[in-house]
Image 1: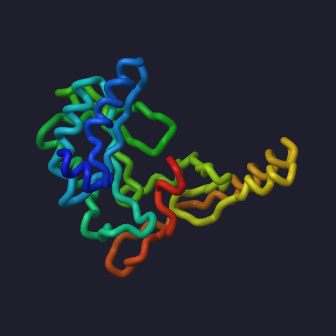
Image 2: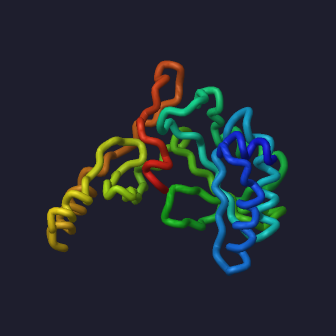
Length: 205
C-alpha cells in the first residue's frame, strides 16, 4: 500500500524501492526483505509481502518493534508480538522449522506452499541475547556492543590520535569484553520513554 509506505517512511517513494529491488535481483544479488510488524499499521499486509517476496525468490524476516529513539507515535499502541503473527500465518500456510541460519538472530521456517524462507526476529517475545554475536560500528566511529544498550567504545578518537593496529585490536577486545548479557528493551505503559534514546537510523544496521 503506497499510503502505508509513505506514512512509515515519510516519503512517497515506493515505486523507487520496487525498482531498486528489481535491479538488485537482475544483478544477481541475494535479497532479504525486513518487515517491522506494526499493529494497526501494516499487519494485514504481512501475508501479501511474504507472497510478493517468495514469488520472486526473496527471503523475508519479520521483526518486532523495538523501543529505540523518540518517535511521533506510541510504540505500545503498535507493538505486535510475532508469536501472534506466526499463529495467524499458520492458519494460512504450513510453516516448517528449518536449520538455516545467517549468523544473526532470525529463526527461520520454510513456507511449504510458497517454498520460501521466513524469519522471525523476536527481541521481546523470545529473547535471543544469549546467542547474539553482533556489534554495530556507526559512521562516527562508535562501536555499540548491544543495540539495546548505550555503552559504546569511541574508535574515532582512538584512530585520530594515531593508535596503531595493536592498540586498536586491544580496544576491540576490551569492548567485546563489555558486551552485556542482554538488552533493556521494555514496551509497556510503565516505561513510556524509549529504552535507548538513539534511533535505529543513527546506529545503523
